[in-house]
Image 1 (cartoon, rainbow, N blue to C red):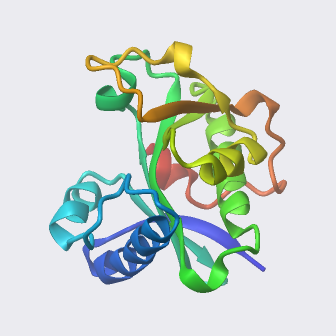
Image 2: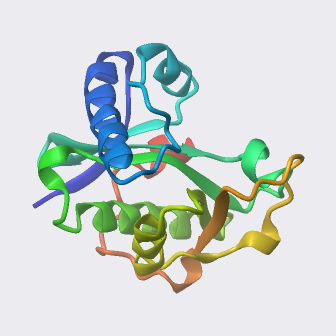
Length: 185
């Protein structure tokens, strides 16, 4: 079993939308409206693909997940020193839920961030009203980091999470194939 991550291209928009829209439906079913109540349109994904921050997770070449990785999240976290990788719009395809695929993807991202040496953590925000999702991220090694956020407009509907990568063991001895694409090296 080979899990890899690669940058999404314009040709991947249908696959990204299928996974994200399944995620929207799943979140709505659980009462989490953080991604809205409507399907995500291609126009919402195109900027992420254009600026190189949209990624696909592949298992033996099959697209099984998507995520957006950025180097700043000024809206939610405020101005920060570039010491973190910011995770957004993370979703696993419908047929892969409950198999710890998401955890393996997060481990792969953490391992890669750790190997870079100049980034110390992965950060994300999570709806405060979704205890199952919060518990999921905590199980994946994320801790509350509310005190590190400095948003222009403070929000009470989200909580801040951070996974320190110095405590993360790489999942394999092989350097993940997306390091040079992810970090431009």
